[in-house]
Image (cartoon, rainbow, N blue to C red; front, side, top):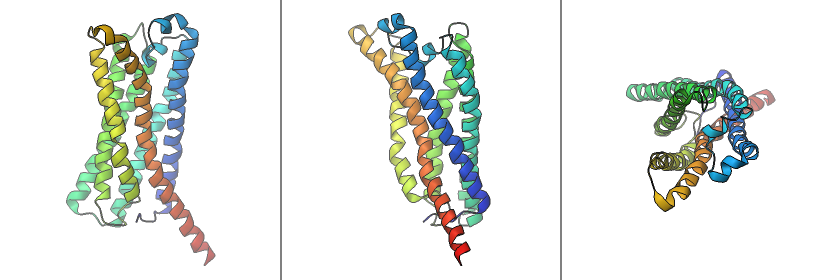
Length: 257
């Protein structure tokens, strides 16, 4: 059973939910909007091959608009993830149920998640502000920084989630049910990431008759992978929502006495 959090932690959790929830909605809308609008604006291009998100940003309207929103979303996502990690650590330390080695392990994993999310947020800004055809190298560097950093946010985040799940009851507001959900869900972005990376490499080769199908799969996998990245962050809303609900109920019960 998750512990009842303090008022200060409840505030951190509420801010984390608002920040990450905003970005989850905004970025999903943006990536699918960009693809749809590019198809409308450039039917001659998509008639020959489907557009990647990088290609859609070359549009004179889509690119600057997308970049502006990434400049908003990237720091907010970093803030939301950092607040979530900090709130979990504060409550774990307050419980005094973890051994010294476990506390060090969780502290290190927490720091890595925040550091990796910082890298991913920088990558989001880079890939959106440096666009095709004039800034190909910087765009690709930003794309690589975002993709690998965000992927490892999920891998290390899952290690952190599992580390909390191994603690005694009451050690954290991160629930057993939430940990079980993430243990299954994490394979979605991992599987999609492996598929996307494989197709990214393969599209550089002459695949003959299957090239068009492989490239189409590559472009379709790209936005779904990004959605799955954000979906992993969304799973923590289950734990945060439970923690806030328990806190509000405890406050209501205290007032009624």
